[in-house]
Image: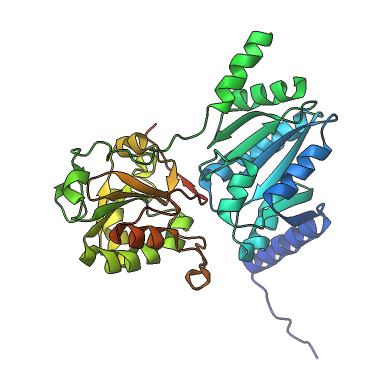
Amino acid sequence: MDVALPVIPIRILRSLTYLALGLLVESCSPSVKLQPATAQDILREVNQSRGSQAVLVNVWATWCQPCVEEFPLLVKLDRRYDQLQTLFVSADFPEDKSRVVQFLKRQGVTGISFLKDQSDQAFIDGLSPDWSGTLPFTLVFGKESGTVVARWEGKRTQEQMEAAIRLAIQN
Amino acid sequence: MHRKMILALCFFTGLLAKELILGADIPLPDRKMPEISGQEISLQEALGSQGLVVIFSCNTCPWVKAWQDRYVSLAAEYQPRGIRFIAINSNAAYREKGDSFADMKTHARQYGYNFLYALDPQSELAKAFGASHTPQVFLFDAHGKLVYRGAIDDNARHPDQVERPYLKNALDELLAGKPISLPSTKALGCSIKFAE
């Protein structure tokens, strides 16, 4: 006796294949660890790189359009400069943690990344007292000096960012 | 080379917003702005008998969306006591992205705004205040002098978990004729999308 197999429309079959491939890519991609951090934790991380690498700290959020727009450029520059370490600090709400991780993965960020775990006021004052609270916010620390050589609120061009990075590497 | 580096350092360290200083007068007090009621209004006209709260705001920032329920409750509490509230939308570069004048009207209706909501077409007010993000609050006394600037409170997402209601405390102290105990605070926010 013949058994009629259910016919699956090609469109659905294609969608299922893409879904399976997407899950496969996701599971094979290098992992991101999102670590809660205060301003003091971030500054400790910066201090550990003193003498070996300049450090760029970028405070961003998935809800911040300019942050999302400049993010790929920061990832690209981090890869281009061996003597630069980039610390991404998300200011997203804690309940949006999975969205942050997904975004970082899509951007190709691997390893440890940070999630703000402190009140706004304490975090802002702890990181840079004259920062108004506007995102994105970027601080660049000198490789040898370990001190701030550049900082800015909002987006910057690649040329401006690279000038700051080169300055930090020489400093 | 050394000189170049010093110049670059000055440039990079100078890229932070300079907020209006405490005690300053209302900037551009007579500048007329379109207001969602269809009238034009200046900050001098908006000033209440006891003071004025100016909030740089917009329709599109998640931080505004989290905090705006408190705009409404504070306005309801303090406007009858002589302190008027005005929100200003300075997102000139986002008029096509949800911050048009028509969008402002819809947004105000949707969230029950009970205060003035005005358009700053070329972000001139924001520049004059040194405002950089939304929401950012400036409280002026009855004489138009700045007595408080900064955040609404210390918890955007959870109003029931606020520990420090900064603006409310400042309003109470202003009305009681006391000096503002915490006149400057900070919170994270979305950058103002200035005219390009």
